[in-house]
Length: 282
Image (cartoon, rainbow, N blue to C red; front, side, top):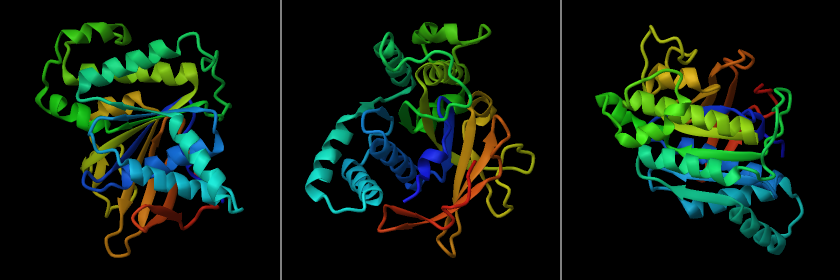
């Protein structure tokens, strides 16, 4: 079984995984990415930050078992069960309730990693080896309401003001900007691949970042602030007639993979079968 998910999201960078608000495929795709990472890197560290309170533990275990079976052709049910337990123990699950909680969780992670063996110096852009994986499900649930109403975020914003280039009011946009800069620093310092799950909103013809297909009228939510501060933006859309999903790279900071596609189908409610696994995504 070829490594698919690990070849998609770049190391030490921030990626956005966008999809329809009412479709679980974004979380399922991220779970497959996490599971493949854990199977391939049993000693590496992974973090899943849940902002919705809907993480499905049993579903993740099924996906993790599937990845183990795909990468180990021999039948070692007992050993795989032990490896499953060890792999799950390598995942740190964090539950947060709002933007302030997400900021605080990120600062706590930063502090916990200081002076650890995970720290790297001078991340080489040619180094594709991922030392860790961090998933946030979802970034849109955390910031969309505050940004839509341009709500002030409170005094705790001052803690993160060092990550802003200019003096900005503590609005939802500024709060998200400070968080993304903190996350970017964390990803580069510790060579973590960060995946932010995001909902989609209706796109317009004037949008610079949107699908290459006219029939796909979706774009990432949270506006241009998000797109300027991340490295990699993707979209999962679905053809309603065939049921086939298309994973599309909308934006790549290095312009190396923009427009690349992977199509896949979802079977048994959680298994992802790529239709073109041998085509290069990057």
